[in-house]
Length: 77
Image (tube, rainbow, N blue to C red; front, top):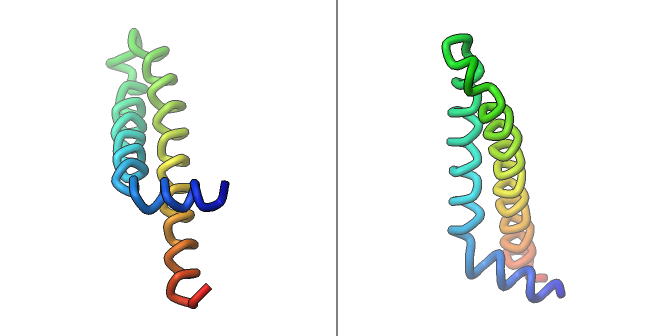
């Protein structure tokens, strides 16, 4: 299982970056939709905010996992 995760993290590192960027975009757009002028879009804003936050978290986990594997590799282990 650990080898599979390492392979996924190493071979598909662009995916967790894309997930994080998508999360950031949803977070920002959702935040803007909270302004009074977009009051009719508030439900969408909440969902964009929540989904964006979750994707940012997943992207960050991917970066942390990648950093752990790279550190182990540098340390020879």
